[in-house]
Length: 535
Ligand code: GLN
Image (cartoon, rainbow, N blue to C red; front, side, top):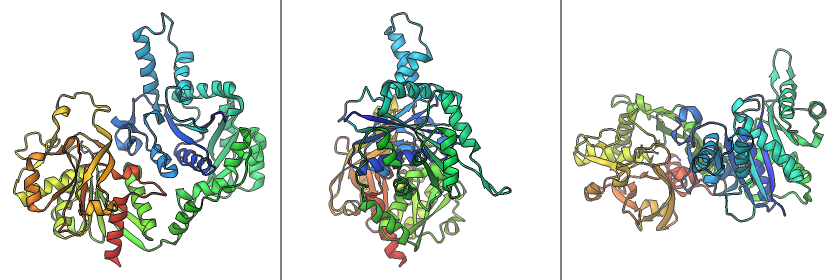
């Protein structure tokens, strides 16, 4: 079968959940046995989102091959279980950089380099994944960031227009729009959708399928109206209502025949609807999990998307432990010795979040001390782990000014420090320790137990600073055990306190590899543990 290409665009407003729709399409096609990948094209100039403040675009998601990407790739992986790579996250910046590098090498032989055709050709090449050696794919789903009409996404739209022409039936355009409800008129309005489709048509793209985001159910008459105004078949007008969970979306899309419509458009026999039993089992568990478990996220970004994968990993682990995880953001900047007891009150467990820079770290250290001395289950991730290590040095090992040299380069006890190879790096983007690294687990440790007794694992990283091995013996002797070690470098990847009920810090980010059908073992162990404590 020839590879088919599905383009997912969005109109009217941003934040409609294009990523969830793209991930759902991927899931549904995968359930039919097709080999699928999902990629995201973002119109901004940054080479990757690695240098973006989480307040701008939410979490930076890291692929196993070490690319810093948009958080939508997290949805793709959680829904489908596929591993995305650096080829699945493209920005305008990367496109321009590739073209400009080629121009500087003289590859264009004196030609004038223009948006059309040079930039659009580069976009097309990547949409078709011409530079990727991989097993033949049945479907490539390409989500384009931003909203139709944005000046900056115009070259992407032009590339899609050309590809549709070139690929014929092997290309499908799915356009996501919004149908607002006007309370005063008690009416759902289709005009913004009509305008958005007109705008697409003006760029030479006729959408094949419309997905209408709505807070109210849309009846057939309304769908019919949209279909006839937009030149789309009625069965290709699908609605995406607000649902109790984003994981209900694929089922709702399947019920409305979104995947069948795609198959019909691309000339593939539709066949039987797959049962997706494990997915339905998960949803059933999720619906039944009503007992609440309160977990505190000690971090500095009071924004849902900033810790997206951690939130989802905890929710997923909750479902499999039959509880509804309720997450409470606790601003680390506001935590003091005086209020820590009150701030953490009522939390069955605490996550100390990742991050960069000075802001809020003393609060993380105070929280780590409080949970360590009160035996409250605690999971420190990346900077969170580093702050557990700093706290232990200050309050147990007696190094009063212990710190990470990221925060205090002159600390006498730099218990978290830069690796030699990092010291000469001056460029910011893509220069951290990124992507999956092997880790050997100490037999019998709580971490190894969480991984079902495994002693070799691989986890994704995103950091510059490391546990300083000069202090390792002191930590071990005083009760903080270094139970996860990178075999190549000897770097400490996991610390834990066996005398404590659940006190583990990981230098890596386990949240990047938790999926709906395969929740991460450390989150599972953490939630399971606090769940038994709260019964
Ligand atoms: N700022 C720390 C470092 O670079 C931790 C990074 C993180 O939490 N992702 O090492």
